[in-house]
Amino acid sequence: MSTSSVTELIAALADGSARILDLTQPLSETTPVLVLPEPFANTPHLSRRQLSRFDDAGPAWAWDVLELGEHTGTHLDAPIHWLTGRDGEDVASISPSRLVGPVRVIDRTEQVAADPGYLLTAADLDEHEREHGPIEPGSWIFFRTGWGVRAQDEAAFLNAGEHGPVTPGPDVSGARWLADHPNVVGFGVETVGIDAGAAGGFDPAFPVHNFLLGAGRYGVTQLANLEALPVTGALLVVAPLKLVGGTGSPARVLAFV
Image (tube, rainbow, N blue to C red; front, side):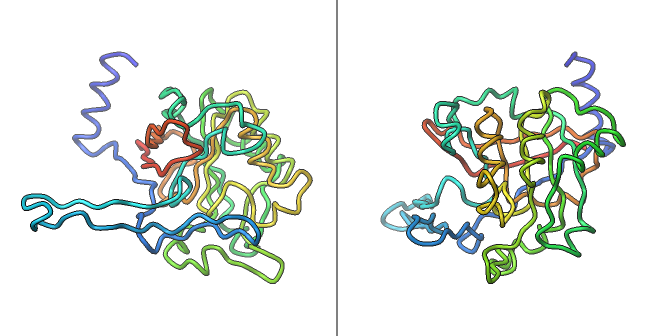
């Protein structure tokens, strides 16, 4: 980016013609977390232990100890999170150039309202490129479903049914499309995970994790405010902790619009 481009962006932010959208869900003790069936280990909800509150333990300061899983709230999935990417990057190894870039929005809010288990297909993604043009190098793809309105109600957010969770996400063809597209860096969703709720029964199981992370790409989950994001033209910043050995990390996700 040239100096003049940076100056123009600063001026646009100052005069309000450009704005910054926060795409991050608030992180607290009530933030929904993924629930796996037995015998698998589950991540805890966020909890905190007080160290001091302007008292004898710290007369001029307040601070806490946090306990939370790497994959809690709005968070990034690194390749080493999944078996197929186990020899790939941890969170700390991801280049900043992969965490800043253009973002495309695939909107299926209406379809998901009618079918909460809606599956995003390769045909859907092909249709997006026909309508909005080729995806630019270094792009993130965000799946807008309207699911963010459930984010403060864990039962509604996880939406567990008789046969498991019912949440939208890519089918096998959509997952493979995302992993194979040369210009796609990562995939983001409003739901608790980058795969559909039914993905444990797909072949292969959890195909977005399987293909996308195996291809050295990234995932972001539990996004907020996607309804305010344009289909094209926004600049995305994904900012996880630089966690050495991290399989994932809570992240602040911002978009310049």
